[in-house]
Amino acid sequence: MDNNERYLNALLTGDDRVIKEIYVQLFPKVQSYVVSNKGTRDDALDVFHDALLYIIVAYKERNISIKSFEAYLYVVCRNIWKRKLKTKVINSKLDTLENKATDLSLYILEQECFDFYIEKFQLLSSNCKEILGNYFNGWSYEELVEGLNYANINTVRQRVFKCRTKLIELIKSDKRYQKLREWNII
Amino acid sequence: MEHHLTNALLETIDRYIKGELVEEELLAFEAKMKENAALKEEVLIQQQLFNTLNDKTTEWALYKEDPNNKLQQELKQKLNTPEYQSISEKIQHIGQEYIQELPPKKNLSIRYKRFISAAAVVLFLIVAGISYTIINNQSVDRFYYEYAQWETELPSFVEKNATESTFAEAEASFRNKEYIKAIQLFESIEEDNELYPYSLLYIGASYASSNKDLQALKAFNQLAQMDAFAESSKGLWYATLIHLKQGDKDKAVDLLNIIIKDSNNYHYNQAIQLLEQL
Image (cartoon, rainbow over all chains, first blue to last red; front, side, top):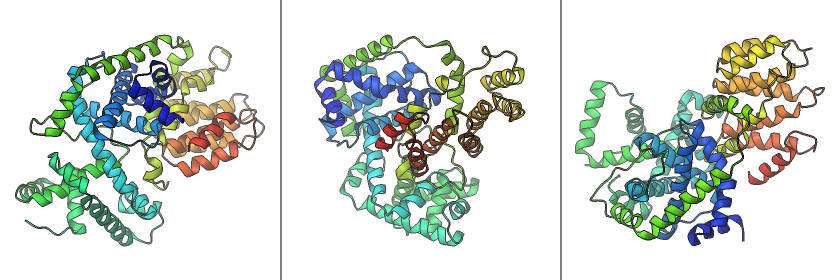
C-alpha cells in the first residue's frame, strides 16, 4: 500500500500511529508556509487540523478523489490559510468543531469549486496553460510578449482571448457547473 | 439579457476585478451587471479563475454563510454530529502530542526566524522574463518550504571569529532585516577573504529577502562556480530552491540533475529524493 492510501485509510479509520506520522512527515512544510505568511505555529496547527478533517469529510460526504495525498493536503492547507486571512477567522487557540462548523462547511464548497476550476484548466493545451497561467498571475500583455517570445502584443492578446474562451466553454459545458451555480455563488 | 463575450468585454471584466475602473465606468458597469444576470455570471467565473489560478493571492474567500444553501447547511449539520466532533478532537490531540514531542529549538534557529518570514515574501514574486507554467506552479513551492530551512542553513560567524568585524556587522544587519545595508557590507568583503564565499551566501539570502530573486540567483550561481571552495555546491542547492519557489520546475530539475552527478555535492541525497518527487 502506498502512502496515499495508507494516510487516507488512517484518517478514515482513526489510526493514531499513522496520523502522527502524517504530522511528522507533512506538518513542517505547512508550518513553514503559514509562518512565512503572517501566521504562527499555532495557526499552522489549526490549519493542519482543519485540512485533515476536510479530507475526511470531503471523502465521505462529497466523494472526492485524491491523486497525491501530500500535494493535495498542502494545497488544501494553503487555501484554508488564505481563507482564514481573508475572513479574519483565525482560531489560534484550539477551538471546538462546533464553533468551526460554519467556516469548514463553507470551505468544503470552496475547495470543491477550486478543484473543479483546476480540473478544467488542466484540460487546456500546454500552450494555453502557460499563457493563461501567467496571465492570471498578473502578467501584462507586454510581459507575456517578452517572457514567452511572442511576436507582438496583438498576437498575445488574440491568444489569451482564444484560450480564455476555450476555458469558459469547458467550464460551462460541464454538468457540475450547474451545481456550482445552484450553490448561489455563480 | 444576452451578451456576446468579446475580448473587449473580458478586458473590462478584468479591470473591474482588479479595481481599475474609474468612477463613471465603474458605476455604469455595476448597473449593467445588476440588470444582466448573464454578465454577472461571467464576472464571477473570471473572479474565481483569478482566485484559483493566481498563486500570489494571499487572501481569498468565495462563500458566505447562507441559510438557503441547502448543501452548506447539510454539511454544517454533519460536522456537528458526535462522529465528526470526536474525529476532530482526536486530530487535535495527536497534533498537540506531536508538538510536545518535538526536540527543543537551538538558539541559532530563533535568531534566523525573522529571516525565514522575510524570505517567504520573495516567494510569490514573479520576475518578468522567467517563464513558468501554472501546471508546475500549482504546488511545487511546497518543496521550497520543506527544504528552505534557512535558520539551520546559514552558518553564523559572529562568535567564531570576532575579528572579522565587517562580516559581523553585515551579519547583524542581515538579522535586523536591513538587507540593503547587509548587501553593501557583504559586497565589500574582498575575494581573497576566507569568508568571501559565505558572504555570497548571505548576499543571495538578502536579495531573496528583498524580493530580488534574479540577483539572489546570481549570487548563488556565482557561489556554485567557485570550484576552489569546498562548499560551492551549496550554490546549486540554493539556486534550485529559488527556482522551486518561483514554480519553475524545469530549471529546478536541471540543477538537481547536476547535483546528483557527484555524491559529494551538498544535499546529494535530498536532491535525489526531490527529483523523484518532482
